[in-house]
Length: 357
Length: 228
Image 1 (cartoon, rainbow over the protein chains, first blue to last red):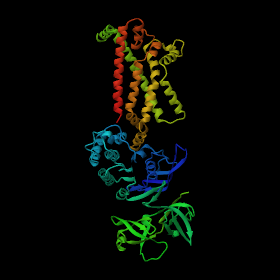
Image 2: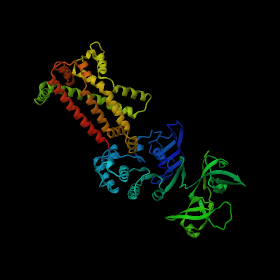
Image 3: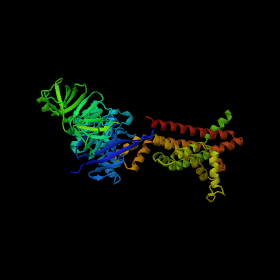
Image 4: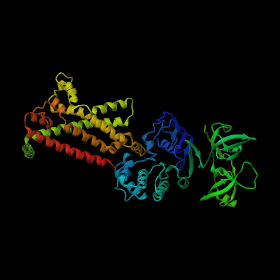
């Protein structure tokens, strides 16, 4: 099956107007999104989430690389209007136009030249879905932040798009509005099978809405949630790699635990680096096992999502590390809050993000 | 003075032919010039605001300088073009209403353009990107930006109208103040004062003041509509 979206070696740079320096905001080697998938892109502020989504929505042209939509290079075909209209986007800074709510909702359909009856039918539908009945005649200055966000989302959902790009759909929105928005996204996904790419710094939202989560760190896209980011130096001792974190964390890493890219045969040694330990590639092992490569600590927090458990482990060195394990494993080891726990780095658990110097 | 005021009011309320004629001509010239200047200046201001090009800052600086150009200088410049010996002399526009309108268009074109540029530039950049993200093409984006800036643009048009209706330099130089043909309220005031027709000048002044007041009220209303 052809991926709905494929990014290949996409690089986006900005020129800082104040200093004139060129800053690389995004570097994505490969990112595929299948039709009907919901993918959440998580990451902190300024990691490139908006740049990624705006690039996918064809609002920004990548400086290098290809953006493929259903296998076709959109920029080779000048990012045609038709391609752009297939991927409407809710911007983090979306504004409502200076008119009534109802006219705002109709905007996308009008620019597409839909018939009056169709416009009315779809508008009625989305107004009900996002509970905007009381707001239709109001203007933007008469709406709260949460209501504005709902209207902004209604403008997109009414288009019944095959792909939807949502940048922080519930930013600055209260819990009640957040629930309405999330339900509406789920509903659209169920009804139309819309492919959704969602940028969020809300991990709860990402895990409950999305089928897959990727993380952006410094413009680099990495699989999974990356809570385990550490800065330090990598060295080599007795045939093993040793990571010494700035905050005292020491990790003994077997060569097979590294994810190496771009033809690298070994991670960069003796230079400051940032490493990410994949939460899903930390395994629980019996505490009796003696080995320098194991991480020992106590279970700090536990959160259960369906058949998986997310643990926060407070290591003996006082660092916190997160692990996602099957619920069955959690039960098998009889873990509980405060239990002693021993973790092992599985194959390909550690990714060296970048040399920080 | 009370007599002159009484006579002036009498001239106004008795719908004196002269007052009506001069007021009507002034309004006609102002409306025609404002319409023409808006048709050119609004798109020009929008293009200047929307497009980035080499020398844009210089163009904006020249435009802002033209805002303060004295009316008599504009009159002289246009005169040099439409006088009999000028390049457009064959059109015989001198001392005609179209001649005055042409001069007024040159006078207010920088106002409409510069104010439109400001209004459109102030419109949030996010409006453009939101329209694009919702699937608008470049023409629809431009229309959306126009709609979002409409209060500012309308204020530009009203300001230009106010400038023309109360202007005397261009109307005198290009119109020649010919009674029955090119005499406007402002040129009539100057002439009537020189001839000692104080009541008629005052009546004209009162009508002008009323028009200016109405424009200002409209201006305030429009600007109020633009604020949130």
